[in-house]
Length: 544
Image (cartoon, rainbow, N blue to C red; front, side, top):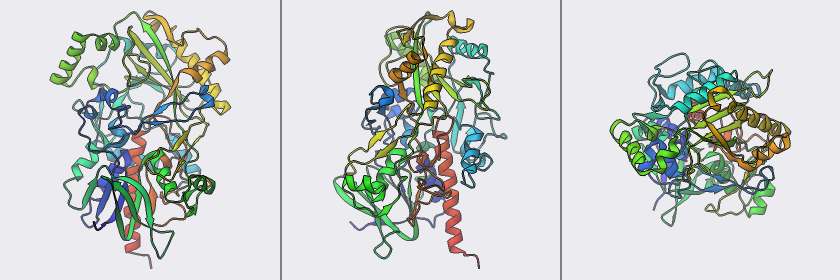
């Protein structure tokens, strides 16, 4: 088969990739090809908000990555789900719409990344968004991504909110407004009771365009390069149905890597771009030494505390046939109830100690409990109080071990390797346990299930974090943006030293944002699209 020809090749139809596909194909003169390793998003559980219980750990929709044994977790390794379907992780995530703090983006700009301050990126958040609140200073009213209030509340969730208020956390209707600090109900990327993934919001409306081609089950093997200029990308080689195929770029075209924090550095390394010692050990010829590829990995580590309560929770309804059928019927008829919920109901953004300028811990409250997300419920009435450090200092890495694109790279998070992170973990567990002693919540608590050893000392509390924590699925920063020696892309997301290649996904974050990462990834797709189109116009109309 003769190769396809494109102006833009987007690798990955995930949170950012779907935005890029929409924006870059809006001009019919641009030929856009999207390569997605997963299949179509036809699994019905993708579109039902609570369906992440069915799509996580499912190899048809999840890459099913697993981290290496981690000393910071007492040698445990963790499942690292990432979306493998149209929409990427936005099709299997918990639907929570959180942007992070204003200060996160201002810090990026202060580090030399011009154009990435909060004032710079807010318009891109708003451009994507159609919020139930309507258009305002902080929200968009007519974007493609539907953001709505949750469609189910409970007495135990209200008690959790009241408990946080007793701890001095102000009530909040919107953690994405003027101030993040507060306690309230999450907003969800949902529309009419259905998930609003990046594929549904951005890709589906653009699929009718004749200049956009979306190729599923296309597993990228490597980038190809110009014979005249070995540092200019010429196209992409991929495998599909057992055959190797290629998409080539027109003159002046670009490849945009949007394969995510794991996939993007993996493809760079398979193409000979990265740390020389890593490439040589994996058996890949070095094309361009770029030492930051795969380095600087960050993730949010959630410490999941579980309590048995003397109040019926979703455990009781899900574990019993008739109530479970009632939940299904309520969703079927009204698109409401527990099946319309994302991963968590209540957020808390709080300060774990005095004198902090902004919150440093985040809670996700669930009126249910399980061994880990996606696994069957506990047999008792349970709740989960999950707390994570917002700005961890620990950094890990992700690198290939073989030249085979089908082999998963090695994921080394280095959780809790920084002293500041260990101290924050202890404070976070203390804060969470103190909440259960408030008058609002204590009347519901029967016993502490996790941990079950009644830890008291700081060392014992740190062991709780080491033994009972899980990833919260927010990996970032493995192709980080910046000006230092470990920066992989510049502020316009161009890969340093390679022409015709950008990265646009959560991997470019200089540091992890203070919250969930799906909304920022979509913003990155928006901003990348504008920069790509600006640069294309500048090349077509050079300044004299």
